[in-house]
Amino acid sequence: MVSGPLAPGMLAVINGSNLGVAGFPKSCTNPVPTSCDGVSVLFNGAPAPILYDSVNTISFQVPFTATTGSATLQVSSNLTGATLSSALVSVPVAATAPGLLTTANGTGVYFVSGGLVIQSSGPVQAGEVVTMYGTGFGATSPAVASGVLGPNTPAGAVAQATMTINSQSVPVTFAGLEPGNASNATVGYDEVIFTVPAGLLPANLSQASLPVVVTVGGVASNSVNLTVTATPPTVTSLTPSIVPLLANAQTVFVNGTGFQSGASVVLYNPAGQQINLSAPNVTFVSSTQLSVQMTVGTTAGSWSVAVLNPNGSESSNYLFLASGTGPTPVITSVLTTYGNEASSAHQIAQNAWIEVHGANLSQVTTTWSTLPASAFTNSLPTTLGNVSATVDGKSAAVYYVSPTQINILAPLDSATGSVPVQVNTPYGPTAVFSVTEQATSPTFLVNDTAGHVAAQHINGGIYSLLGPASLSAPGYTFTPAAPGEQVVLYATGFGQTNPAIANQATGTGSLPSLPSVTIGNVPAFVSFAGLSAAGLYQFNVTVPTGLPAGDATLSATYNGSTTQASVVITIGQ
Image (cartoon, rainbow, N blue to C red; front, side, top):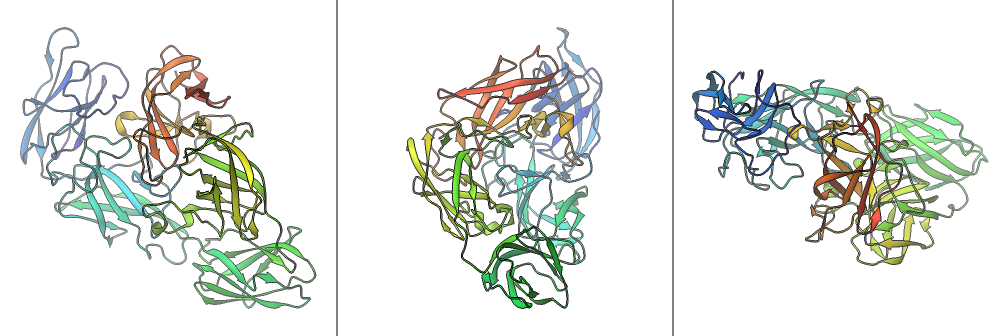
């Protein structure tokens, strides 16, 4: 059934036959029950917390009272009306038996803080804070009862935890139980938090999968991969800021970060023609400056420059003017964002992600993922690429900027009705643009123009992407929802929580009431509705049974408003 060793608090799996009933993953409750569908796991004769059971698999937590040596396991059920028990199986028990969770391709299960939607098991860069998940880290301080979530950060730590990345020692910020106040926290999960150090990648590589091993109590975990990518260079300004029109080559200093010796420069003139410059026309001055010999001739207007490092990492395009004065920034529309769709008829709400469309809004195209971790200390960045914005006179967090669109998080604001929106750009402030603000503007996030909702399977706490197989890409597998399954749906624009949050960077909580959700025009049970990240709302919903396979319409009504039309969720057989 189970191979060891096991460790106190570990989330373990028993495989076999005729173990339980056919079913779907159970939600992790706090505390986790010791009997599920009439099925129990007896650890040394005492029932252990069960997170999931099916015909062939049972997931349970090893009690924290387990002691080193040998223990017995037995599965007991009364599914037939009579109590049936498996044979006793002996398993070894150790003080620690750390195991890191992996995806199908051996990549660790981790996320990087600081994104609009938490980025799971994707590339990380030096300076980013990463939380990696595992189990079997053993006893904690303070001690935690079996079957309950861990205490909130920073309690629940374990002793003597170290880690290496590509055999390089990396300091551990925290190692222990996943905090109970974390979104979708799971009983039995451990986590290790660390900052990606500089110097992991050779200078000639832009990305590599590097092995990670965590050692707890002197016992090393399995090795999982961490995808590390080089921090791309950034261009922040030119000297002079407006390049004069000259027939001959002139020296222009490109200023920024992350430049490497041997870097080259790509220019695009106003007609879109590409001009490649390298040594001797590009001279490395320092990691923050290049000296470039460029010729703009008599071609006035908006040019762009990008820096390409020898390792293949490239900056975003930075816009600059050849002579003349800067263009006039203009806002043309403001609306709630939802994936790749947009409707000017949609209203905005406090704490909702919104799009500001227009012209000349930014000189660069970038997201806040390029900012250092310090930019997210107890707050969200309100300036990105020299662009900032206000809604109703209050500063808004800025996630994405480009010349024609910026994405911002509407600030906490109880005002309703017409409110002013204004963007401060490198070319100066825009004129004020008025938009209607409501208490709520419920909107589902979607993955594509077909309206497939952004969602995940819960799978007993091991989350995976939900959607049609057509959305799958290497390393990112989408699968349909099953009737009767509990899933997580993501949205924005659902307003304040109860109790109300005061900090958009750290605030979480439930909505004052549950929204009404229908799937395929059939009411769906909602067990939780609230904030899971900045401006990101999460709904735990059970898919109704009896739905046919294919795309089913999805709708949520809350506070008298309904989410946008044409949102679907894919149902499997």
